[in-house]
Image (cartoon, rainbow, N blue to C red; front, side):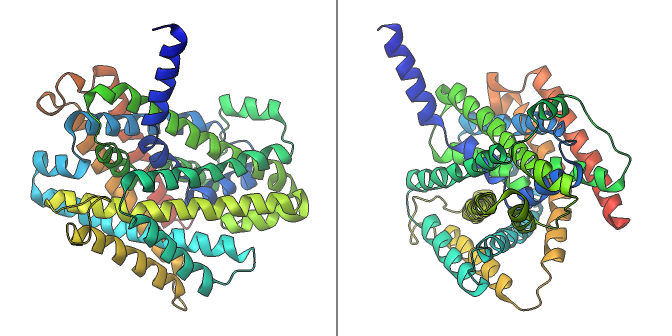
Length: 413
């Protein structure tokens, strides 16, 4: 076999393995993530780009560990938590995960409604239509088909790359601010630093990365390929985040425009950068929110069913896995209906989900690192010393940032 044939096989194998890591990481760039990155750019220009390498490292550590655990054990994180730590702790973790994920799913439908409203589509039309489409995709009955559809939707993220190049940023300043940290003694700045890292890793992303690997029925022989997928997905997701900051930092920051959410950013771009930039930004918002809305109900249902030993999986029919499909349907319907209720306080829902995520994430990461370094579970693929140190360092950083976030929220920032 010549080198050309070997290279083709290698490229084919890598492309075939792509999916779980990409989906998990890109799904994190949802409505809340886009709003956070847009605020970072509009408030401080390029000054927060130095966060990207840190965000990427944290994401790589958690996603690679999740992929490795899935490949080696053939089980999702919920199952491993139950086996190692008992049913009681699994029940608490799943209850918190369900509450947080419903709240985040609601925010995704809010993002869809906000994005489509920029094209004149009323909420009473956009939300029910999105709910039906999300339900149809998650109920399609084939994991491979669902994965391909969601990966196709992920391609829409290129709109943020195009938008960034359209607005003509100062690339020299971009490069400088990416590698040279900028510190501003402002509660608002500190709050955004916390939010920027916090929006990069969510509890559901950890479950998603591992469960998707299990769904693909891969084993230890595919470990290297899944590691490539996890790392490349993490890097790509944060590159997209960087382009969002660059776009708003180039256009909105010099104009002194401040925004409250991602839809505000899209609208604010039009008078300064032109209608096409607004369209690109809005399309990205809708696609990102839709992608996360498709992912969250299924990963939540999968984790809950796995924790309690119930049948699950996109390939299972209603008769084979009624609880799995029933939980997905309930989350979608509940989230969509709440958006349509008059007077619903979305801000409180989002704050509540942030608090739950902030408390749950460090706990889940502790579970993850203890499992990943367990020789009886992971064998020769357990965490090595350097990776264990990185994992614990990530947990410490996230705990500190979570405490800072709560303090700032209590202070009204």
